[in-house]
Amino acid sequence: MKIDFDAITEFNVRQPLSQKSKFNFIPDRTNWQFVKNNINILVFSAVYEVIAIPLYYKLDHRGNSDSQTRIDLVKKFVNKFGKECIGSILGDREFGLLG
Image 1 (cartoon, rainbow, N blue to C red):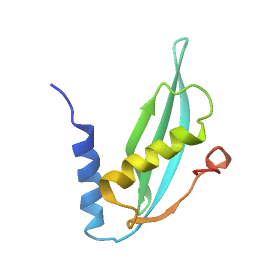
Image 2 (cartoon, rainbow, N blue to C red; image 1 turned 120 degrees about the vertical axis):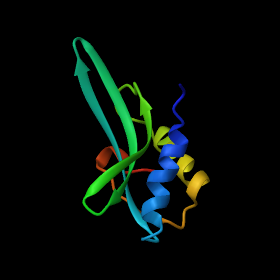
Image 3 (cartoon, one colour; image 1 turned 90 degrees about the horizontal axis):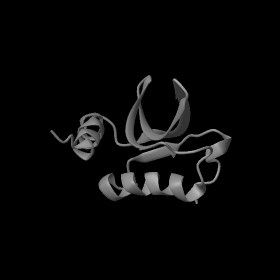
């Protein structure tokens, strides 16, 4: 069975979008250690009330992300939903330059 992550993302965005016109978004990178393996995840999430809903991610990303990788995640969202629903993009110092 193949999971359609784009369809899940669309559902996660369209449901709240019917109630709000703009959202805040958070790019983040985290590192988990499983046994002796480091698992790096770069994620682009939407803030809805008091929770962050992961929308797009890139697995096994080594170290700090570069600007182009972060821009690509934002572009993936904008290409699907448009830039009109973006209120702001909030990130820590790693995400200071999105282009």
